[in-house]
Image (cartoon, chains in turn brown, red, green, purple):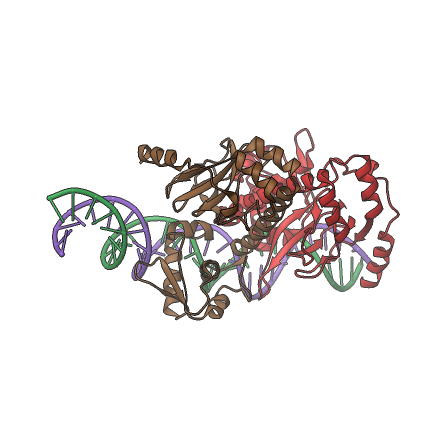
Length: 247
Length: 247
DNA sequence: CGAAAAATTGAGGCATATCAAGGTTAGTGG
DNA sequence: CCACTAACCTTGATATGCCTCAATTTTTCG
């Protein structure tokens, strides 16, 4: 696997692409950039890919880059000294990885699906932040959104029951899939183990609660257990203990 | 209480003070400001005070200001529809309250001790952010620090035992007090109820764990139960499941 | 000193973890 | 296409840590 992944990683160093045709151009840290800003970004960016399951960086490791998720799904996680792990963030395309102003990663970052990042050299990006207010402003907004989301998740971890946690996660996935008409349908980006780590539960409890929600007619699963179907999102939101969908 | 607090609040609208003699000048959002920046800030700032226990803003309420804590201790909290509450942040002098770019508060903000904020009109402050990179840069750093702290707390809420949570909190308080020599000693800013809400536990469990830590000789309490004493911080950190003190 | 608030302690119940087994799916090679 | 294997998921039985309910003690404040 390691050998193979090296080959993939090498392939992942793709040719530069025109930022203006980038699929996440309007949501990422570069959302407010003008042509001049893009010229600068294009000069410093590179692409790199990871296979599902690979570690992008370990907690405390020095990261020479920051970047944006172009494709794929990654988790941020923290762990105690004795090895208990908590997933503290689930990042999707357009989300920003890494921290300007600090080289050491605060979390472990893991690719859940095959993932491509648009990378910026950290030093160069820090200089850009000082000189380019459009990027700095957008990064502040995105960081504040992340902070709100983290605080919403603290409510889940501190107060909610297992059933509510699972229902909250499923409603979040269904909302992100945003298929217009009922029945809503979405493939789960995380397996049971990753879900359990995100929800502060065990695999077994997650599985049991999914079964219970299915038994209650609130959701259904497609064969394979990786795709959720929901006819009545309101019922799921009630099970989640949330009148409005969480962030 | 309400009548009296109004009087205090009125008194709280203090005369402007010279920013350069402000006690938190080097840690707050204005840490990197020069003389010109201060001139602008002084023109738009005002002070306001709250009594211990008062609500500074409700979740979802429109806040016409943002600001910095000058004195006191406040909590941010979120709640479920059926009234369960989780404290999601503990803010101290120099911390920043409110979100530029959004009027509605994401959390309920409560003064735990008597508190004074240095307030900025939100609209004016947002304009300042665009035109004053020193403030914008500092606010970004502070927001990223908050995000790291929130993620550390998610590890606590998702993985740690009651004993570890209480030990983590006590070590955090002792570290902030930063009294150089052993025995370390600090007054708890939160009562048992507020501690329980912050730690995702009940009052009773917090009380029992404090008793247990005391019985084990890891901490001691001064009469009144509001002041912790610790001879051996390492032992407390081990009880907290943390080799290094948490953020 | 007296009353209210805050903290402690105890007994018992319940939700979730843990331990263990069995079933299902996906990937691989014949 | 099928057999085989490994990973993933589900289900069951039991254990336990924390919550709930209830009573008492301690502290604070008028």
